Image (tube, rainbow, N blue to C red; front, side):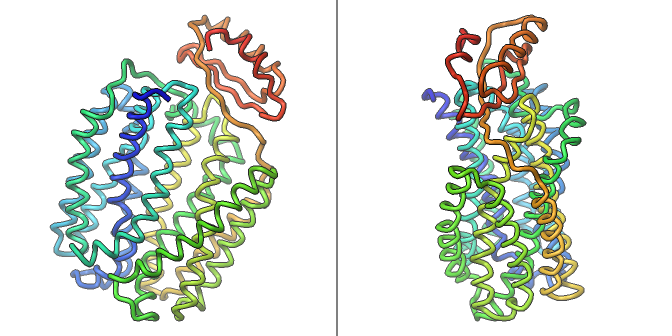
Length: 452
């Protein structure tokens, strides 16, 4: 990667991470804080406050991405950051649960994810784009983990209003960072690997294997958000831990889960055992939902279930995007990821709302019983999925071609040993390929693509 590409990737990853940090920091402590707000004794409203940002994010992230094609990437990102800051300040000033819900709704409306991805595609060459996207995507997991540890510590120092105000200030500081650190693209155009096109939705939605994965990320985040309606309360009531000390649980839980996660993922990739590891992780997730039902009333039961839950969660969170990338048509990868990201955001909303309603009406155990049903359906779908192809995605810049020449080149590329799929997009000047790296004849490919 060139210095400009590294700067673009690092800058956009930081901005993306700051926004997600503002979303996640309150998760481990909000249910405890809400008890002191008018209306906060109603778990249904607490769950809605936690998850409602997912609804506006799901509704607006794709329109924002498409708007960035027309009015400019940075303009859309500036607007999204201002919306996010506005929502943060409204939530910070809230004196009841209803104003927090309004603030979180506006936070989610600052849906810059798709615009950030499109800008990154403008600023990186095809052969380095996957690495740059991985830098941005990796901020989600890191931010989530940091939030579980930092959230309780910040709650002790500045409480929830202070956390909201801090994230609003950080969002505003991200604007000059975007202007002066992230380079301006020489030109912006549509990228099939990074952006969603409405014309590609019917093809993507018809692919059953992608549907299984979209349901999976939806279910995974329903369970995650629902859990945070009841687990903070359980840690306080069973372990006598006030909110300021919940990091003492989350830090070792996350550390141990990562120690299990890394070898599982490496084993799955190197030994072509992706499906067994994936299905086994879904089964572990189901087992932990069932285990939480009796364990929710016992401190060490909660801690043990959390450790195994996060092991499964981390494995699945890492594997799902990779599986989408392997299965999606090369020419529609961006559209497939857009549907996937929307499913994830909807899961956050449904999880918060359903977790709050179930906890309010039937108690904490009902939250995990609901989660068990949802994950059980996912396990059935995952068990029946085809083993994912052992392919990787490649992109190459090509010289300007007519539509006829692009079609001829595409046919030649498909005939190269190890090429499982090829799409030549003459309007983008890019060839998208899926290749089996064990059989791939790279020299033959490069003879067909002299411009690379």
